[in-house]
Image 1 (cartoon, rainbow, N blue to C red):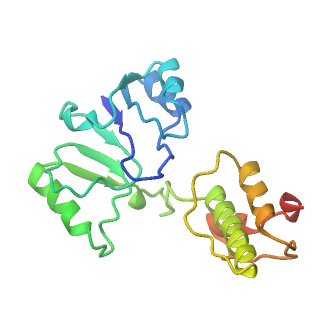
Image 2 (cartoon, one colour):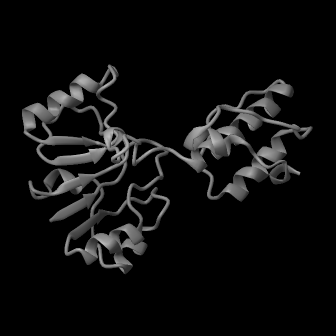
Length: 203
């Protein structure tokens, strides 16, 4: 069995769908693990090499053996090319999204399969792969940052990736004149719960 983690083609996408620890677990089961060298990934390629993964050129998944399972996070470029492999990713194709039909047609023409992470659930029907704590934290932090800038007559604009939550908290603190006493975003759930920020982060 071969799993091939591709680089993410979307601008500013630094996340990885598999960690070196996850790769180690898969290798221990006898799988072959190939990882594309992606300079923008939050986890350095060397970390995957160190645990025994094969490292290949970014974007080379298109020439991977047909039986390879291509692991990614977000959508592929909309170039219309047929998709021959099995792909694991967030396809964003089943809820009427504009490009969803095009993506599914590419799988149909190429004979490949989409294993959409959004529909991977456990025995209780709960999603296995979903945004969680840090998505809620980041969303709440950006909301505070936008609020602080708006009070100064400015807008948040484009945001780049933060290296750590400490770095993000520092930038949030620099964007506000007064520390909010409370912030409520969402409700329960994996993203809503961590949206309750510690004021100490910004004191």
